[in-house]
Image (cartoon, rainbow, N blue to C red):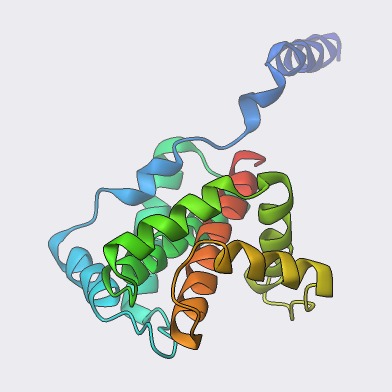
Length: 194
């Protein structure tokens, strides 16, 4: 009985000695590499055929299989929790969506630079919470609430202040790019908190 109390006390002491951030997941970059040739083809097919007109390119079963296999290998290597795995897959999916959008951008190179500059110059403390609040429910499989009128106005101003063409194609593209970036940001935050 005394040995059990000593062992329990030693375990508790060891846990309290670990810095607070030590339990957080790390090595999110593991998801960006280590795919075999067949998995690389599946990823390239998704990025290469990303539909920027409808913005409805759905990840295939093969793509999700490749991401799941890689997430499993990374989890084994780095000790990720199930929630960390889920957020790592969301992060990588967002990165692939962004790569597909950029590859098939309807914007000229100069317009893309202007858009990225406007995003970087926007109030980051306002922009990303709006977008993350929109993407969070989506990532949880729930229906997202519409942003407020003020938030919609702010997002529109960020996009239009960039100077990109004021047409449906360009503004939808900019919104999709922001959404892909927000998915990555939110997934990375959630991943790091695991």
